[in-house]
Length: 331
Image 1: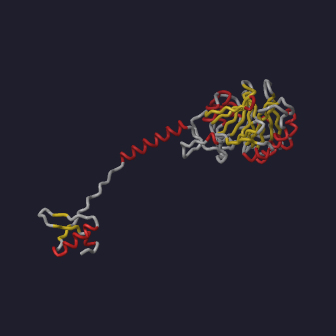
Image 2: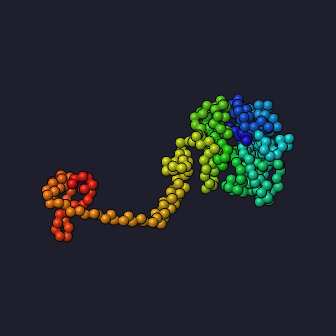
Image 3: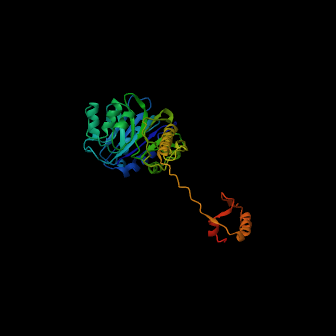
């Protein structure tokens, strides 16, 4: 378990370093083995990164380069070590390599297989680097569909678009995105971390699994599903109203196309099952007839008319009556 967070400027003014530092320190509850930051300046060729095998609260000096009004974004990370010693700073986050600078919360199980499949040499021991390699050599879609494990990530393509930050989760780790009243975009592992930062939010929602969020100049957010895979967010309680789908009862953020296709399949299955169902024909009940004594007939006729019944006649024209009358104690 690790903690990820970050800030992307959405309006002019001084970079809110105090709130960013608060957010970073709050993420310590998810890891204290190492901490790191990525700082992207406006119109810079590449972001700068700093990290160390220390707690975030002991690394506040790393944020000094974000001071002023020229900072575009800041990525934050606190590490709980799972693979790769913190003594080798290359294993700490942000993980840098293959043209990608990335922070990751989660654990991967097939990182060696990914490197072998891509025929790429690894630079570090940390499992996260497999994500860097897959994003660089393939695509976010290929990466999230082929790498096994848990992930919520934030990354920058340092060689292609250093002024954009991408966010993505496969739903096995939480990731929450917020919009402040100043129009900044802030994200963190959980809603609680955002609330503890000191930022005032106008909106907040959980990132939808398999949906890539791209944040660019002015705090603009674009999002799109990059895979047909669907699952619930790790913390599904915080869902933005625009992600609610009234057409789906089992998955409230599924797009309508997927829901419609699934409902059609379900309808076909139900139809097929109905056709295959055996029709059970109930045997027709045999009616027992009894002869009514003539001296009771007038009374029977009167009761029959009062209760809306009619008397039946046999083939010989004799008045007869079903035995249920006898069961009712009428004679």
